[in-house]
Amino acid sequence: MIRLVLVDDHPIVLDGIALNLEDVEDVVVVGRASSASEALSLIGHAKPDVLVLDLELPDRNGGEVLRDAKRILPSLHVVVFTAYSGRERVCAALESGADSYILKGTPSSELLEAIRTVAQGRPYLPAAISSELIGAFRESGRERLTEREREILRLLAEGFANKEIGVRLNIAERTVKFHVSGILARLGVSNRAHAVAVAQKLGLV
Image 1 (cartoon, one colour):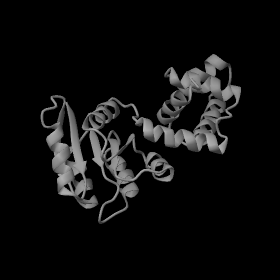
Image 2 (spheres, rainbow, N blue to C red; image 1 turned 180 degrees about the vertical axis):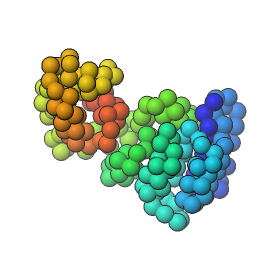
Image 3 (cartoon, rainbow, N blue to C red; image 1 turned 135 degrees about the vertical axis):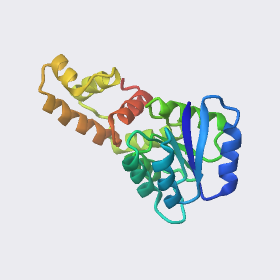
């Protein structure tokens, strides 16, 4: 059962999401909040698996709330649910620790898919958002990964840890870490899972 907390300053949005999930057998809404302070308090008490978070809250910046939520509950997975798109907003949310970025107006079936996917520890980006990131990536020229970076990226996609990659490629673990940092920077992402997700969209792995 996926334990869910919903955060939005519009009651009608909270009611709508909760209603759409009411008959979903593997998801239960364990709390709702309309402000950052309520959300962070609720996360500490309810211990949800997934947080559906609107970044536009009346009392604090959404990115700060996202980071604080992850600090309070490191196992928490976050689906950003917002009316605003744009590369800068998407990248900022992902860098703050978001596992998914969904636009309001998206079919409830896709929001549910995002919730289920991130609950399994995998990132979820809709096609429209992926296109935003891929466009930014291609425009900046960062698609030109070195052959070594591509090798490491393929092994990351297969689930190998840095030490295992070092053994397979006959290079030091610290060298692998250096290359992974470079891959994240080139792809404009904040962690390995997002790197693999973007690389798959681009056909790099």
